[in-house]
Length: 87
Image (tube, rainbow, N blue to C red; front, side, top):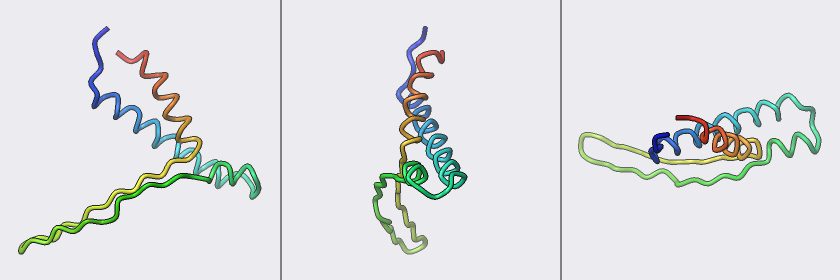
């Protein structure tokens, strides 16, 4: 068994979070209004506001936002579990 690189592990975990969060959003849309829908749509957000780099020829604005719901956390856990069997 070869050792996995940190970049590969982070990539798999991020993919798990993306798939889980997207699945949670879809489930939240399908399920009728109520407590269960609120459970799937409740999320935690973290963001770094836009930063602007203004040079004479170019203006560059960069921002970052991270949104994670309960199914995103489940996606991370499943991705970490599956990562054990990926060579």
